[in-house]
Length: 173
Image (tube, rainbow, N blue to C red; front, side, top):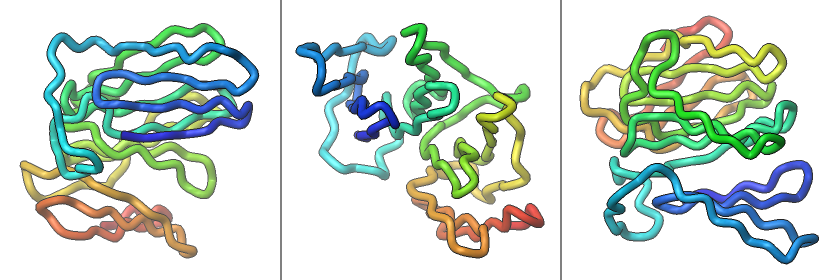
């Protein structure tokens, strides 16, 4: 569902039930299966599917941590590249990660985590999560895409709730 190449040229490939890493310098292509007993088959490139085991991926190059969202398992997988260990977060600041879908790294390097109704930020320099003031109106929302414009606005596309403009400076939707 997502492919990312980190600064060390390691390619991370997310599928619907796990992820693999690929390094041209090594003859290995290890596959890491995520905690999933039954995987539902889905059509390719279905970003609006609300049941992805791995929905998207972003890499924190400073701390060498791969972030992967899971809308199916309502969680965030954090894989430490150095230690080879994966931590599973089901909430941030006490708020459940319901339908955790799009992960986005903005122009300043902040990682955004979008869920059903909320957004969270992660600052690689401090390794701290914060709850953003971004909020969605509808209960059954799925965030499908995020882009940033030159004015530091985030444009958040939602499957059944339209398009939001979020001003990062003021915190207004």
